[in-house]
Image: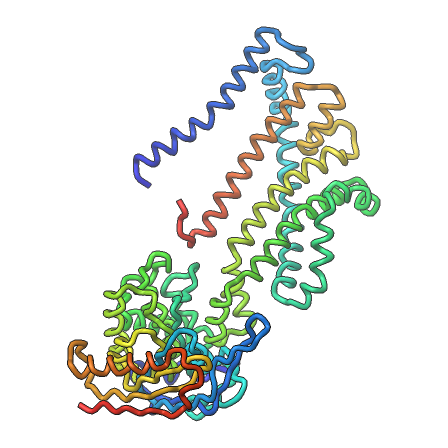
Length: 266
Length: 284
């Protein structure tokens, strides 16, 4: 990267901070001017103090860690099943005709509509939350693996035939690498969906004990709401924004590294 | 599938026996297109001697590429039999290599790894295989580009890599489906010289489909003119000019003219030509 483009990358990074900074300034001004109901529009210093306390007590870091772990575990389970089933239906026409209509139909069911059914089976504990997160991650991965495998150009597969590849060789050396961009896009999407699913599960299902602020950001938000602590609600929302942004950057950078063989589009 | 050739017999520059020829007997092939059947090839009889360089020329859509794919074993004929080196073709095999107009290199692999894939089904250590790949890269003039990815190569370089990959299992026959069709004229001319050099070096049978009459005259021992719809062999022309050929040589130009005439005669007149084979000998 040339010196000039790295400088412009930095300035462009700074430019992205203008809007959040302006919002924070407007927020601080509104607090200083005593505009609005301070219970509903919490002044910025109150939120900052609440946030500081929540970090110091370990509640907020604990909640963030719990949410991230839960999202990662649920995503892994869902991605594993999605990958395995997508591979089967993507590689075999007969299994696709057998299983895909059902799976594509099940995909249309809104994620949180599964809660009554899954909670009846698995209770209201951790298993239930993980099942819901896994389910949310399953569909994007399943769809991308199925589509990725089916879209491998015949031209590439013919090369494998000419060199006498076995089916296993064809799958490992041609189909999976060729499908990798699609599959990785599905894994990325699944992670975003699983993140939303995690917060939803934590918020809606609760933690089995009251006001468990450390049991994920979703539970943190639910507890803050129960206690009418708008300052903590805002703290929860801001930490969601920040961790979500960091998670997204990490995922994008990782997949860029994996797909480095592709020509840079810009 | 059991590999037809083992690496043990692959000491460089050492040919086991005379290269395999191709015998095509009574081949017919048709395709379904929008509910109707298109007859791509009808009653193809052709013998290609081992070690020869033969070109198939004809109007586009005349089934030349189909014939190549049948020999490769990528498709099965409706009728007839193809033998390569006396063995009937049932499926693709390592005794036949193929180069396509689109280089078909895998974009996620380096040049070296792309060529290594051609050796995947053969026995031998990684070390032996890497040595073979190094020789091939030198043979096609890509030394220094071992670790380049296909998107970093020019069209001509990609085709060189594709040729190296097709040659990796040391096939008896190399099938070339318009290999230089997508290249600019300068690169094409250079690669024509290169393929001639590789053909002499490897001493294998090469069968090339081309639209380019000059290319066919420049490279071939025999030019086969294919008629269209249904594809039939209209003429076989033996080219006895010494290689490498000079494109300005009057005999070269005269031969080019003759092939052009035959090709224009092959344009649409449906069924006018019964398959009487015109055999033109060009003696120096």
